[in-house]
Length: 292
Image (cartoon, rainbow, N blue to C red; front, side, top):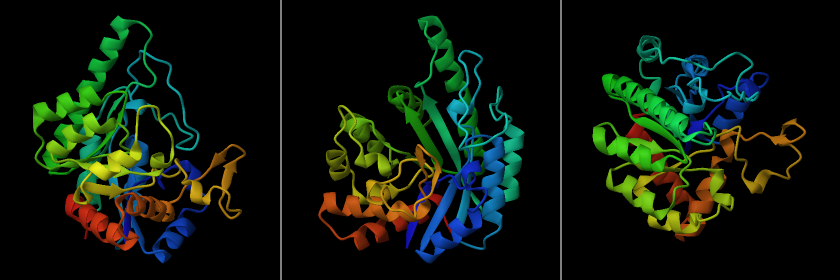
């Protein structure tokens, strides 16, 4: 069995065939955690999880790019939602109620963190922008702490700030650095703090200054989680298959079943069998998220 620890079947792009996609995923002996990026997608993730006795879980949280600081023009992702999902404030109690309603189905808070990809042009506004993201992050960590849940951490161009925050709180319930692409220096720091490292289809891409082979080699197997981040980051092994659905002419949709390609690539780099990667990463996911 494999566990896709970061999926988004709660997104709009799966509305027409979500049940069929999950059925296919189970057939391949894959479990999943669907990750919230705002209140609406968090709510949908929980609703989906409640439909299944096992194998489907949810995480709730407000993604930094869905947080409207009032300082930049917000950019909608039509794959995610067709509603006005940008939130100007983090409603702690609304998210807390989701967790309470979720019982054992909500297994983490996330994805939360720092994202400076879209940011104000002026230095003064950038500092305000960063501080607003820090304030949001602290509120979401407080939510996770209230329910003793691990963190699913998103970070883009903000690793220094994320590390600073994590060091200052010394969080007790652990977490995972989702879609890690921060280089060896940051890898060591996250591992020293006890965090898991999430790998997905980004490991097949070339990013300047990042050697994913070296990163994977230096990450202990006992600290690795596998994920797809579907519908994004389709592995190259399936990109030419005719049965893979193109929902738009320029968008190839990823699915949880493709997590096996991540496990296979990690096995190749670590010079071990894919079965070993499957066994250990599944154990890691069960341990971190207390899956039942």
